[in-house]
Structures are given as C-alpha cells and as structure tokens.
Image (tube, rainbow, N blue to C red; front, side, top):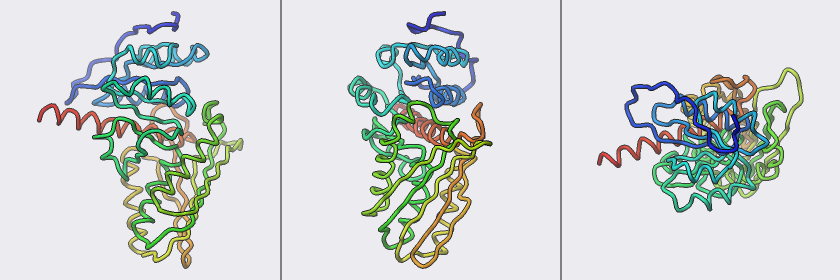
Length: 308
C-alpha cells in the first residue's frame, strides 16, 4: 500500500460511548505521533482519523495504519482536507507556524506539542480551562509539563520567587530527531513558561540527553530561591499537584522535596505506564497524556455547548 495519499483502513471497533467522538488528526509520525494515535483511539470522546507525516516516515505511517488510522505523507495539506475537529502537532517547532496559518480560519482546535512560541501555554492542573475557549494551545514541552504543576504550588505558597533552575534528564532512546533539532527552542520556551508562571526574573533551563544503560526514567530537578515559604502548606500543595497529574499520567512522582531557609529543591520523575511506551519514555507520556486530557476537556465542553 502506498502512503502517498490518504489510505483508508479498517475502522477501529465500535464502542458505546457516552458522547460522540470528535475526529482528530496527528501531524508527525515519530514516537510522539504514534503514541498519540494509540491514546486517541482509546479515548471515549476522541478518535484518530488521520496521521500525516512525510515520505521519509512511511514505515512509521504503516504502524499508524495498523492502529486503525488513515495515513498520508502530505502533511498539513492532508490534514486541511480531512475536515477534523482537533489537530495535534507533533512535528517540529520550525514547521508549527505554517501549520497554524493553514488552520487558523478553520473550526478546529490545534494542540501544539512542539516547543514553538505560538498558542496559549496550558498545563492541565494549572489552567486547563483555557482548552474550553482557546483554539490554539501550546503544551510548552515535556519538561514544562513535568515542572509547571510543582512550580505553580511553589508560587502560590511563597511571597516571591526570584531564581529558578530546571534541569531535565531524558534517555537518549526516548528522544527523536525533531526533539534533538528543537533543543534550543525547548530550553527557551520552557524557560519562558516558568518565568510567566512564577514571576521569577531569573530562570535557567538545562537539558541532558543520557546515553546510560539501562535507560534512566525521565527526571526534572527544580532549584528555586523562594521567599516567605510556608513549608507545611507547600508540602500539601505539591502532593495535591502530584495527585492531580497522576489522574492522567500515573507514573508522575515528586520523589524529593526539601526547603532550607529560602532555597527549595524538588525532583520530579515520570515513568511511562501506558500503551506500548518503554518505561523510560516518561517525557513522551507526560506531554501526550496532557495533550489528550486537554482535548477531551474541549470535546466535553463543546458537547455541553451544543446541548445548551
């Protein structure tokens, strides 16, 4: 079967869903895109209609077809023709602006999983309500999705935050070519999101791609100078944030939290526990789970609006 045009495949088995399932398309057929397709077909309110990539991703697209999705190597052009309700951009930061330009006038929700600077920055436990009104959502980065829930708790339980450092470590096997190419954008957009959330005038973000074997779990370490910390309230808020994240990413843990005077340190680990992902691919799990959670909130709010 040639994937040069959209190729119909056998649809996934029918399910007795409570709400009509919105049609979704995925741009990108890498590790992110294939995992997204699997998650979408497991959703009660979303279904994967199309996975669109490039000619060079033909083998990955065949795997998407095995999941019950139509496939195409025509990228955004195929997505525009498909007439879907939700688009997940798992391609590259460089390509995202053109993708938004092609979809801006359509009645579609665009969920950006690339570290571009477009769209409203959203994290499910911090400001998920934006998914009900905005049509261009930025997931920031996998590192952002890991640390922003904890940093939100820190900002709400201290008087001010003046210095934040975030260091993420990800297994080399869990990082595709697009992520490697977008490393500068990853650092920049994650830092910008941390600055916006905490109000800190100084933010530094570092990233390590580890070749170690066995492959390490995805980890993010936070160091912050936070003044007027309320330690008891902070510990409870951080735990509550972790519990909230685990509702969509079960392998999320705040594995360490310490406060010494005004210096705060926290470590977040994310282990992949869903689908076909290896356990070390927590970076993929945290951002994809967040993206689908937000799109499901959009789908449910849209159904409520139609009923009203």
